Length: 384
Figure 1 (spheres, rainbow, N blue to C red):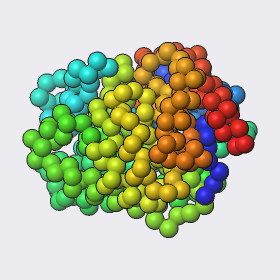
Figure 2 (cartoon, rainbow, N blue to C red):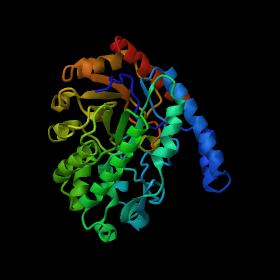
Figure 3 (cartoon, one colour):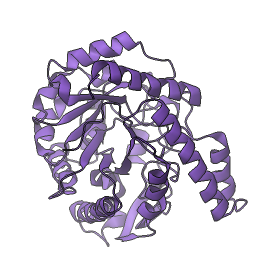
């Protein structure tokens, strides 16, 4: 196993305003591909410099190339991504209606009974070389930290299969997810060839759909068997890394991250831990969200496999207020009652901007949070 990154980061970062504007102008045909590429690479260089100065052990490119963290497809615009076969369909929004405000009240991403959804309608294919576009710029920007590459887990894509629209290409959702698994395995292999030694899959279904009673009830109405899906999703996600050694293989269990601090699920990992954690045998690192009471306590960590690093997402990305260092240290000590301290690390709870726009904090507030993580990691694990 590679060295543990005690001060970690989940993935997305707040975009500088000039980059957000350039991406809008690029879509309107006012900025050329070459100019957008130059601006993006400059923003990545600055973002890496900021993360390294904050004392992080690994850094990302902020996911600045992407319209959202789901690099394979657009959330509403299926054609916006590296994978072909998706299409924008006017359909029942389903999962898009399950988002909640910070106060817990439902606040859908799509209003009404019909709205745009990205659905798989043809066989999975490769639209463009996303690794070749993204990773070299990140690797060139790094001076002392490890470059980390983030990508959605196969299971996240379950929301993109509907029998009515997808059945012609994939009679069942399992065959679709296995094709997504194979595509993502190719991403992993390409990254390893380029020298990347930290690969992090993101947003599997587990803690978005499976832990919240209100969400489970909705899925039951739609005829879904979540207990069976949990096992299938975990095994498919795990198989991405079959036979792969010598790198850090991580997965981030997200509860949903949308503008305005919106999220999907309330509830701790206890509902899924016993069935899930032992099945993630190919992962040596779990990034878990623990920034608020809705995440539950640390007791489910007893189900984590021995030797697995647990990265505690104790610093929230949903509020710009800076956490108290003493409180974070105390919570690390509480987690160490269930997982040895030497197997723990620290990170933000989620990405800072899962899409191009985020309104939860300013860029200086983001930087202060990352510096806090670096400082705490140095103090809690001084020999690393």
